[in-house]
Image 1 (cartoon, rainbow, N blue to C red):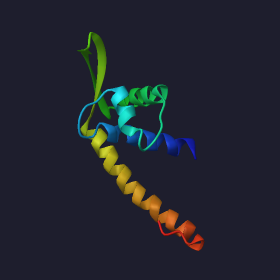
Image 2 (image 1 turned 60 degrees about the vertical axis):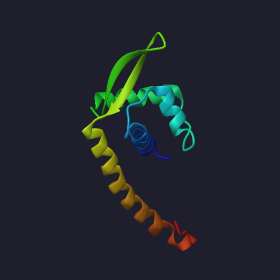
Image 3 (image 1 turned 180 degrees about the vertical axis):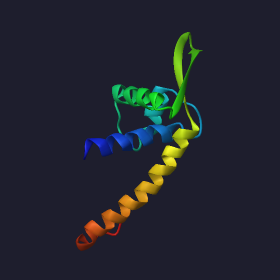
Image 4 (image 1 turned 90 degrees about the horizontal axis):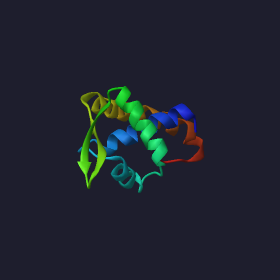
Length: 106
């Protein structure tokens, strides 16, 4: 898979993991696990990139005697998810065209 496409997909997956409530890294990995495998190092790289892009915010709070970072989606992050949904409909249309001779029904 094209690295830029995969990067964009993973970014949206991380945003979707915090779409309804703020979360922290380990919980995000656990929540995404039924759908995709992601290493901690990949997740934290994505979180930093999304923070710099202002698609999420970060706050630090003590939990069990340790500091934990909590991530919350911003309105721009929610808009990115909506953009992705729109873009994905177009990708699926192209996929159906490309695979129509294969008898694909997806």
